[in-house]
Image (cartoon, rainbow, N blue to C red; front, side, top):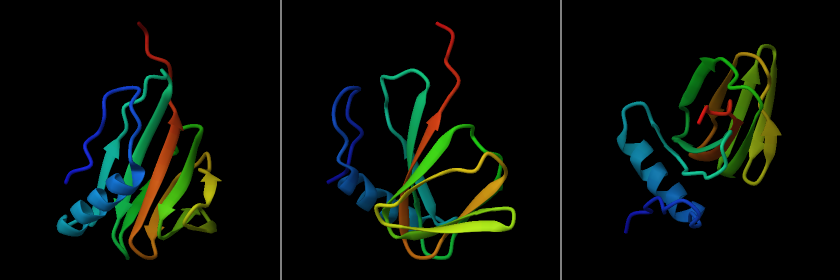
Length: 120
């Protein structure tokens, strides 16, 4: 049974989505899979990202104001000389500079980003 993304306003079963994305990540050469959640609030973007043990999101620019919540597993968030280990149910702000994310074990995170408002 697939963890389909519901219509806007409907709840998302994060447990099912976590399982689905970890399964997809394990089948991918890069060892990762992601899905952006539908969100009715303009200016907020939430993406669930699965990484298999030992994989990483290499160093990249900060998306702006953002936080990372570990739904399952253990990951290391690295920015320059500083790093922080995050475990299941821990949340941390993402540094406002180049950073990377390393999966110490099979890991799923919820990335929440405050995005620029779209013109209507």
